[in-house]
Picture 1 (cartoon, one colour):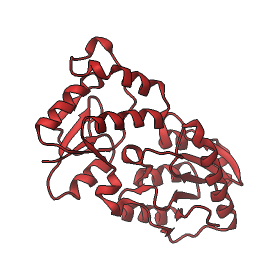
Picture 2: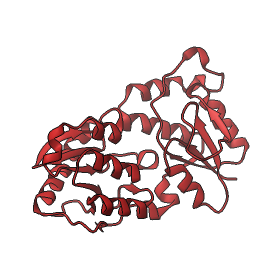
Picture 3: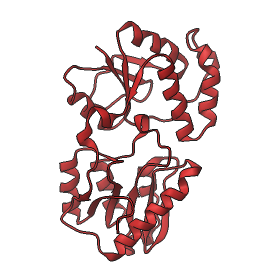
Amino acid sequence: MTLALIAGRGRLPAQVVAAQDRAPLICALEGTPPDTLAVDLTFRLETLGSLLIELGQRGVTQVCFCGGVDRPALDPAALDDETRPLVPMFQKALAAGDNGALQVIKEIFEQTGFEVLGADMLVPDLVALPGVLSDAWPDAQMRRDAARGEAVLAGLAPLDIGQACVIGGEQVLGVEAMGGTAHLLETLPPRVREMNAILCKGPKTGQIREIDMPTIGPETLRAAHAAGLAGVIVDAGDVIVLDREECVRLADEFGLVLWSRRGGEG
């Protein structure tokens, strides 16, 4: 066995496992077990050093982070001897924004000798290809809103706060922050329903793709419909679409536009 998944919530870990010829080792942060997968190793941030040793002893050479996890707190009293030398790097990660924290975690694994692979490298078919996937097509206003969304996400990138925004009538109606896309869609103002607004999702500048590639799935389509949106727009080539056929089916059922858009496309 050479591949280990650091697996979190959601459908992505199971889809990565299903695409492999050999079953990978499944590791999970305590408190965030993956959906539908049996966990081989559970760890805490305070025992990460022990996990790294265990992976090496089991012959693991490649690691893939996939699925959602919450940023953990660090309990100094729970540190084991193998993890204590990593504390300065942990402190750097916990003080950083999302990208900065993920870069530190990636470096810890790479410096220990593991190759960190993105889920898109293991399952290339998950990545959104350019084109309108739904029966409904974007009208002129939606195309302007999509361009506005692209500009907003580019402007937010230096702040390292999110991968999504909601745009309607070229107005910014919501921006992803803590809580992720689901929280963004659940907390939109009621007037969104009158504006044919759209969810725009794409990577930040410097996105750590190997660990945190933007992702949508059927739950995103359901949440967008429940919020009264008219479409979901993702960056072609830079966003994972889980259960693509189900996403397309839901978009058509709800009358949503589902568009995998190239940057700069009008």
